[in-house]
Amino acid sequence: MKLIKKVTGIDISKDSVTVCFGTQDDALVKKYSKSYTFSNDVKGFKKLINLVNNIDVFRSEDKNIPIWFVVEATGVYYENLAYFLNENKYSVSVILPNKMKNFFKTLDNKSKTDSLDSAGIAQYGIEKTLKQWEAPSALYKELKELTGNSSALQK
Image (cartoon, rainbow, N blue to C red):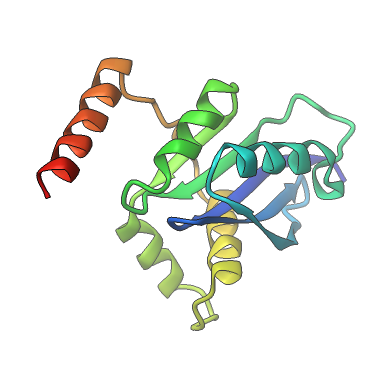
């Protein structure tokens, strides 16, 4: 069977990034990996990319299939990873929390762990048509950081 979609589902928190890899082939067979956890910083992001480039589930004769990184917009915790992936020319889709919550309601699993959430996000990415995340301008990013710094200083 030939792969037609590759997705990395990402559950993110302040300190960690938990991922699950999923694929779909032309017979619509879906496969998911176990989950992996990295630190939510550049060092962890680089480890994630290294794993993505070497994990068996994504090995395919067709290297032209993009790997989608699907992440839920969890506060501001997803932003550094989204910028990192975007700057490194990966396909990123940021999903609103209410969309993920409603999708999770349709799944059989009612437990909530980082591993299960990353698998659910990967499943969402496999089943849905994804929209490419567009990074805000550098000026907007800088203004947001300055506003955050100003608020922290005032407190």
